[in-house]
Length: 190
Image 1: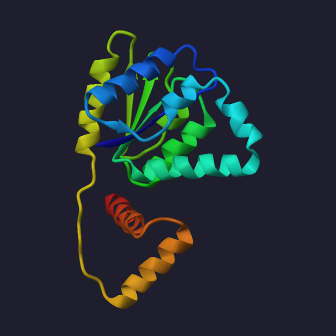
Image 2 (image 1 turned 30 degrees about the vertical axis):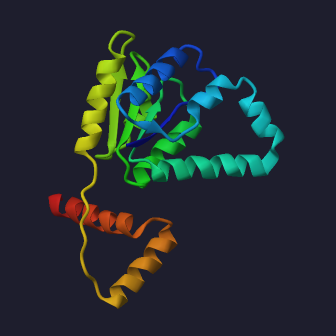
Image 3 (image 1 turned 60 degrees about the horizontal axis):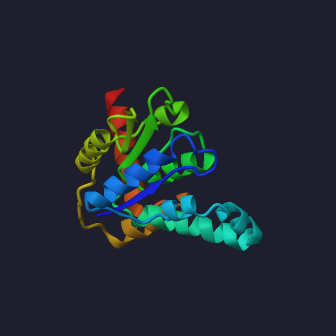
């Protein structure tokens, strides 16, 4: 199973050992991390090299990150250290309808992320002595919110409309239909 596991790199000295432990446990459980997080951790000059590459290097980094999120079966982020970049990735993951696990070290609640309302967002606190158990619990929870495939037939005119509207909004056709269903569900509860 493919997981996109990432974390901020700058200023993570206090949680680096936990990030490495998560990566190691994911491998032990048979998951493959499709982000290059550990490679970035091991390269002291990663961001300096990225900056030297200019706009093209940043565009490539962005494209690779978004592609990784899209390809993953689920995503996981260590969010103890606040990061706008990781926050953006969390939001993209939810937008792409991925089970999205957010981990944080006790007493470091990512307040803004915790305010997101989505069935796909799973936020877990861990302590120094229970990280492995929390990861296992989080992965079980992620499996429970994984989407189920649903196929149906629609007329060509409805398909054309669906394609046009989803393109205008910059989302997939599936995401467009999900939004319609969720809006209907909210209206029905009112």
